[in-house]
Amino acid sequence: MGEIVTSSETMKDVGGSSTIKCPMLNNTNYTVWSIRMKLALEVHKVWEVIEGEDITDEDKKVKAEKNSMAKALLFQSIPEAMILQLGGLDTAKKVWEAIKARHVGAERVKEARLQTLMSDFDRLRMKDDETIDDFSGKLSEISSKSSALGVIIEEPKLVKKFLSSIPRKKYIHMVASLEQMLDLNKTSYEDIIGRMKAYEKRICHVPSSR
Image (cartoon, rainbow, N blue to C red):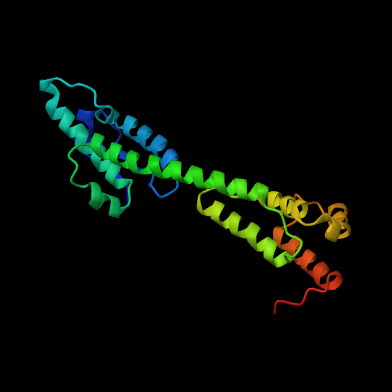
């Protein structure tokens, strides 16, 4: 969506800036969005209608103008589907609280899922009867799920987790060789997996998956 450009007359009354581009809310950025959106509303001097400050009768016209401005800014910053759901709410405060209620709950669910994923990641170990493909696939799946929830597991962490979690007795010579030969902070996860698969096929006689 484009920028909201307000008329100079309206902004003279409510004390805001002439132009602002609002952040767009999505499924994973509520916390950052709320910080940026509060600042945008404060710049336009309409945050007070979200806080629900008391206002005198003679200021009702100004309050109505501020409420309209705040709603306009909020509706610029949320997806169209949410606009359709919240369009019937009559105050910016109700819109803000409805958005918060939905996403704070979602954030808590996301945090719980991330904690579970990270626990699974920490506990995961390769079984003696698993192949490199099997185990690397499990780590990649956890990494993908974590990324989808907004947290990226960096490649060095994946590499070190993989090498520390495979059976040492079976792969100790190759692991030691890789640790001496490569800078694990700069080696890609796919590179390590490729080297380990080649070693597995050569030494452990694992048939090709192709």
